[in-house]
Length: 64
Image (cartoon, rainbow, N blue to C red; front, side, top):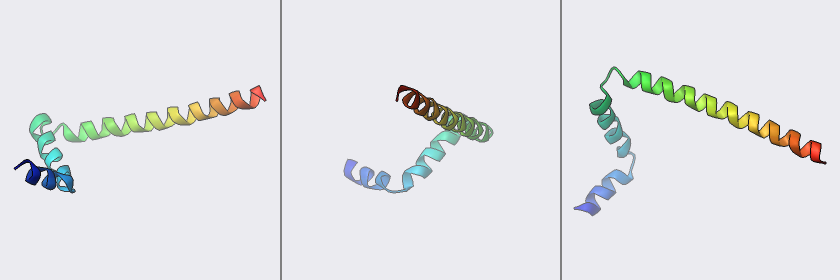
């Protein structure tokens, strides 16, 4: 039984399971808000990553 379940979840079907679970947990009205929040967080992470790379490059150039 667990093997069949693992084979089912191993494919792309797990995305649908997660979406259905999220709708049950958060409700349909909260999903767009959560997606917006995750998008903003991803943007802030990328921005911080770029700034950290620039600071590291400046530090290496100053050291040489």
